[in-house]
Image 1 (cartoon, one colour):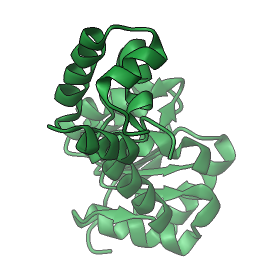
Image 2 (cartoon, rainbow, N blue to C red):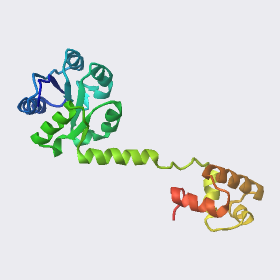
Image 3 (cartoon, helix red, strand yellow):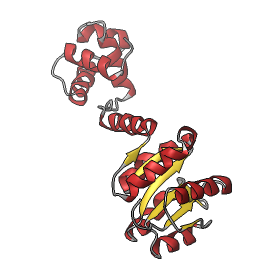
Image 4 (tube, rainbow, N blue to C red):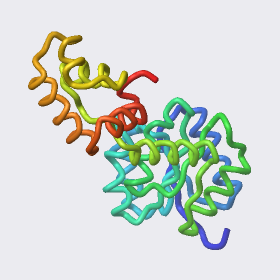
Length: 210
């Protein structure tokens, strides 16, 4: 790695910090500091550290809360965390972290490579993390079922049989006018125009059992 890059290793256990410090040193990064408090981490970054390697939590403070100050000091961030903490990763990436590795699935060589990529301004993601981010992105974009009232849900379930409004009304002990009113609201909520479309849309969204 060309040029000396000062680094900070934070969060996790003393043992993990020590190992990461040694890996960074062998990768040509240095000096490497290992502050233990969130305040000292931010201070170290503000004093010229070009790289922060950190768990998702530092001294009981979420790393996400520290990122504005850390990134504001022009410090690039590489997250190295346990698989159990991977749920916090998408938020950190959106907030500006450059990459993520999982402790259980990375080697010293993986860390060294990720450090070089991060310092060079490139992103690095462990395949497991990339899959998690993709899954959360897909879930966020997936259509969400509309909220139906209990009565609308009853009418929708009754519509599965294809019965007309009067038959549904008798089965549910309601007036035909009330059922028709519920059905109209169901059409609006599902974005459909017919009984058949409503049933298919409800099945697609999982609002009723197949």
